[in-house]
Structures are given as C-alpha cells and as structure tokens.
Amino acid sequence: MTTIQKALFLLLTFASYSINAQTSLPNTITEMRVELDIVNYDLSNKDARVKRLKELVPHTETLAKKNKDDAGFQMMAGFYNAQYAGYKGGVGALKYAKAARKFLEKSIELDPSLHGSSAHIVLGSLYAHVPGWPIGFGDKKKAVLNYQAALQLSPDGIDSNFTYAIYLYGQKKFAEAKIYLEKADKAPARADRLKADKDLKKQIQNGLEKIEQKLAEK
Image (cartoon, rainbow, N blue to C red):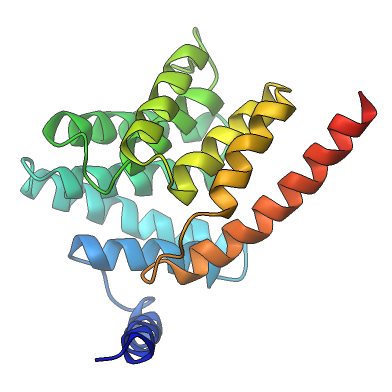
C-alpha cells in the first residue's frame, strides 16, 4: 500500500466512523480518540458538544472502571472529563475537572509514556486553568512540571510544544513562547489527527502573529 493509499484509507475510515458517531458509543481507545476529535471539530456549536459529552463522559468512566489497569482507558476518561469541564464552565465544571485529574494521574501512574505526553499535557492545562485553593486545585508550579514532563516525552510534538507555548504566552513570556510555537509549527503531521492538526496549525500562526506584535511593542 502506497503512502497516498494509506492516507486515503485513514480518511475513509474517519469519514465512515464520523457518520455513525452520533448514534453509537466508542468502546476502544482509538474510537474514543476519533470521537473526541469529532466532538471538537465536527459538531457545529458549544451546546451540541456539551450534549454529546454529557452522554459520553459516564460511558468513558465505566470503561475506565472495567479496565482499571489499562492506562489508555484511564487517560481517555480523563480527556473526556477535562473537555466537558472546559465546555461546561462555571462552578459545575469543577466536579469534572477533579475527575479528570484523578483519571489522568492514574494513567500516568500506570504508564507515564503512553501516547507520548498526552496525559501530562491535559493535566498541566487543568492545573493551569482551574482556580486555586480554596475553590479548586489550580497550581501554576504543577502546571509547569506537567508541561515540562510532556516535553521530555515528546520534545518535537505539536501538542507538547503548543500547549506550553500558550501557557508561556499567558505568563507574558512572549520570546520564550515564540520558541515553542515555532517548534510546534515544524512538528510532523499526524495521519490519525488530521483535523486536530489543521486547527492547531491555524492557532499556531495566529499565536505567532500576536507574539510578533507583542515583541514589537517593547
């Protein structure tokens, strides 16, 4: 099978699964990965995403409990809870953020290298964005530790570099953020994450433009 044929196969597989995504529940780690990309990039608005995630979160938790020694299922349950918390927002989101932290920490405990650095990336984002004590568990130091752990596992990855760059931008460390955004921009495309990578590339370019403006103002 040629490279082009492999790419077409992946696209057709993705399209076929996308058609049935709203009527079935994902049961494997690969299906859950694909489903989450569909929620983020195919559903038209926030309400539709929240509705679908509300259905999916308890399902992924059930799978994680049935597969308690499998790091992948723990990680996906963490991803879904974190995503739901992000879209839901407000005080009600904290419950899901805490659940996400629990599943992600379990995933890292079982296999810290699974999927490169994904669990550390999402855990770092939770620590970075959840309110701190006494409301929540947010902790900037723990956020940085997780971002850096992700970079150690995936030094050239698009996600690991992009998320750390965004964090640095939020801390007004624009020159440093630019370094990691440029690394993210050079990251190789992932055949199984085509839509995610396309969206990330747009965000990277927008981020670089904003950083150039910030640096020019100094």
